[in-house]
Image 1 (cartoon, rainbow over the protein chains, first blue to last red):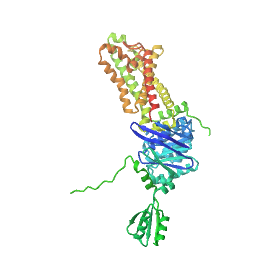
Image 2 (tube, one colour):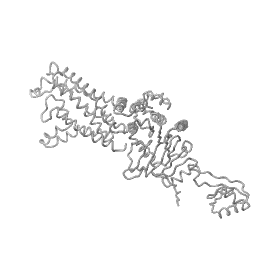
Image 3 (tube, one colour):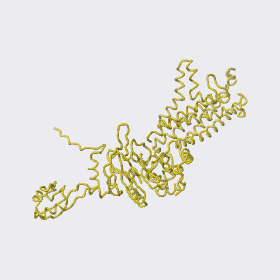
Image 4 (cartoon, rainbow over the protein chains, first blue to last red):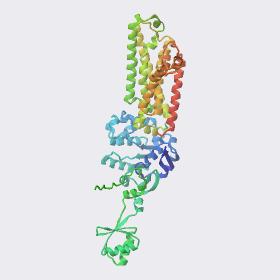
Length: 307
Length: 262
């Protein structure tokens, strides 16, 4: 299990991680979601003991990373797939890593085969595509057969077949009871690959929960079609619903549940023809949650009016 | 599962695989051989062909060991680059993060790299220095007075030439720990060996006489000379002083490695 406890990291004048606390449990895929620059990579680097926290701790099964006797046997990580010496072959890269943690040499061929890169094992890594590098990174993460796995933006650069492969891979790791922690800035990706999601923005914890939890808490709207739209509109507005016309066909209602709308229409003697809750997508939820914490947000350009 | 821990020995094995599995190391060793042997051949052939017209003073102070090993003054840049790249390539490629995730104890990592670098460079540099010395004496023989490794002082000078090159490789590594960028390290390394002597040369004569013996390259010349040249340290004192320089640079580099974010 992975525990982040009041973690804070300052770089000269910026706060990358701000009093962040959460736990990542085994047996499920946990997504780590936040806009670019929100502190995901910094948090992962601190977990691996690469960056020193300003305050707080990150522990693996209760221990600091630096205190792990053979770290590759406990934690497998893929931070940056291209961070391999370009002049070394894939096999030598893995052999050196295995030797450092006293992992048997035959394990190198096993992980190369699992990752599907055995045919290029004796080629220099500098010539690898990003997808092949990602697979090499996954092979390295699996070398020590660790119980905790961290992946920073793993689907970047993968083709659709690779993305499907990696999703199934995360799922199978979690099903084996391992702790799987995957960062991404793509909510659509997390919606399909993660069970639990932790959302951060500007280094701060925003929310945590299952995909269903997160979408359920969002303010969804209800679409309603009825026999007498103007009267239904005034009825719902008297109940403090926020009502918008949709192409004269029906109403979009916010602030009232579908149950309340149905009862109000019945009481007013209006026939309801359609009543559909509009579920907020995880994407919408994410945008709402992190709207205030996007470091490099674009805005809409106003058209120029030339005289 | 029986979990074997990360040890100094296991990290040293890992670093040995890394050291010899990149082309820059192999090329560096080849360049070291070519420069030391090639320039050694040029210098000794030139001395042999001019020996009969050389003045008696030159003949009197002639050192058959240090002249035959003159190529080391160029090979020192090749070994410095080998040492530098052993650590800076980890930073330029980003693989330092993978390395430190596997070996969180940074002192252990640095010590392992130093062991690999020191042992392998000592073997390479002693082989190249002995070979160059023997080649030089063969070229001298018959015309220029030669010496043999049977003499203690000759053996010491030849072996210390290899030690000098090994220490410079470790100095290059220390600069790599401190600066983390290949280009910056190689500039500083070259400046230390070439520019500092020029600056000292521009100082008043009395300062030159007092300080030029402290330059790393002057220490090298003292280490590989059979008798101490004028105004220089003795061979062992020079060797000790160079060790002090290297250990000081390593101490700074290892402290920074431990403290900085990777």
